[in-house]
Each structure stands twice: as structure tokens, then as C-alpha cells.
Length: 269
Image (cartoon, rainbow, N blue to C red; front, side, top):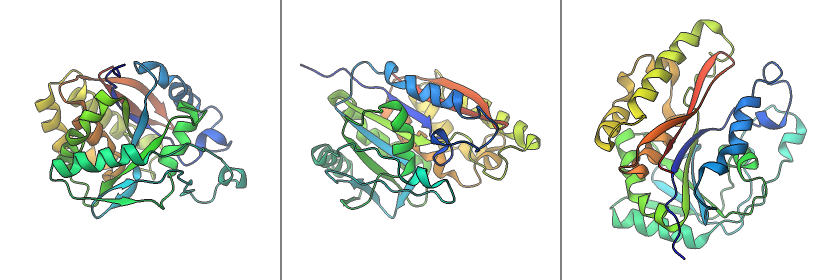
């Protein structure tokens, strides 16, 4: 049976373990995002064979693939309640899919490495505890490349695109707005809206070439550096946009969270 082509998706993963604790913002702050994440699996055509996740929280000198058969969790957040360091997500890895990824990158002249020891960071297990709570789909994590060059990460996504035809769901996990000093401060809200409006226009229903050109030049967008003083939370979007190929993108989630505009995008599906 031939797998149906999977979409590619860019998701917000919230702040630390925000969905599993109280007190991070006013009551209900994260409820809308959590509800959207819980419903996300309904937007894919069939149950994925595996998940390929690019998180904002893993950077390496060269693109690196997690090859662990049973990845641990990396609790890479600090100062949160003790129970948030006991959260579990016992998903299996997939050395076979990891090998497919390495081959695709090598075929496209992208230097890559492997890592069988690193755990899945919170950009993976926190949102996916909501998306696929049974943890019964294999997970392979892929790093960003240091330097955070947008054109490179679009090319990286293009190299990974064939996996979509093989039942692999490619997800970029970050935040479309990520200026931590501004969350909860109303005076920065307009900056987030300016960038969010540009991001939607740059992506939604744009042909592949135009979309790639827009994303490559993201720093010229209105309030770009106010939204992303450092762009690691935006770069996973470049990967999924590259993997989208000619499939058009659309905004699938939009909300003001602690005064900041946050969005998610899906390509295809």
C-alpha cells in the first residue's frame, strides 16, 4: 500500500513545559495553543510512518541526525516546577528513517553527522505529548546548522522532501515570535503584529520561488529583529517550507499569547 503524501508543518511549541504547569502567565494563557496542538493530527491524511522534527533547540556545526533507537528526553528548561522534570514521552526512534535522511542529505551534497546519545529536547516532547500523546509513532530529530543561514535551511528542506511520499511527517518546532523580553509587555505587541502580518503574506498561497525568496530575506521584514533577536525559533520554518516544494502554504493557527502574535503554517495536506 502506497503512503499518502504528508504535509509539512511549522508549529509553536510554547514556553518550556507551559502546557503541563500553572503560573506561566495569566490563567488560560496557553489553552488555545494547546487545543490547536491536540487537534493537529486531524490535519494529516493518514497516520505517519515516522516523525521528522526540526527543533529550535538543537544546533550543530553541521546538520546532525539523531539515530537513537530509544531516545531519552532532554529537559532543557530551567527553574520550573519539579514535576515538569518527570514528564515522559517514550517514543521510539527509527535508525532506518535516520539512515534514509543521511542518504538524502549526502545525495544533495549536504555535510551531515549522526548522534545516538542526545535526548529529544523540549521543542519535541512537549508539543508532541499533545499532538500524539500515545507516543506510538517513531521520532527522529534533526538539528539546525550553526550560522542559521535561511537559504541553507530551505535547501535542507528541499533535500528531505522525498520523505513525504514515504509516510514521514516533517515538522518544524519553534515560535513565529520569539523575543522573550517582550512577552507580556503591551508596548511590544505592535512589533509582533507587523512581523506576523508580513510572515503570513510571505508564505500563504505564494509560489515556491516567491516564498523562498521572501523567507531568505526575512531580516528585511517589518519588525524582524524585534520579533527574533536571534532567529533559531524561525529557522525550522525554513526547513518545512523547503520540504513543501510546490505545495502552497497557509496559516492554520493565529493567536495573541501574552500580548504577542503567534502563528503556525502548513504546506500541503
